[in-house]
Image 1 (cartoon, rainbow, N blue to C red):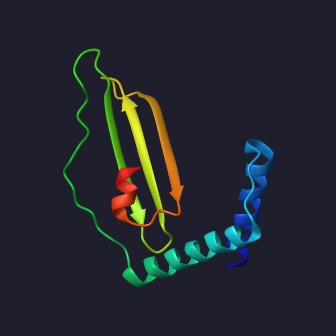
Image 2: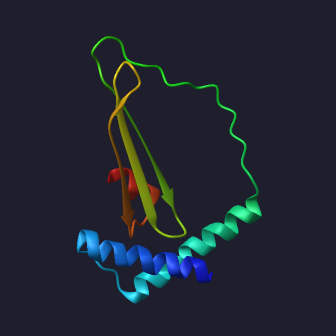
Length: 112
């Protein structure tokens, strides 16, 4: 827990220095609590095996393929979305992840 608290404070410090953004002490504590709850849940659930045979198929010619996905955490009211664009050679041209906080439901997360 102590390491998690240091990580949360250090992350906030970096946001202040590099992005000119700051969180309140309460928000940092809430984020840490969500993180600890997530760790507890993962230890209770045990490892998850995913056996998918899906493979990324490159686009043809000069086309660019864009893939995106998202997730919603109902316990912390957060959602996260990721997007990646690749060329026919599989080279990543652009990628981005976005974290949304205070998201009420999975339906609201999809609307974002």
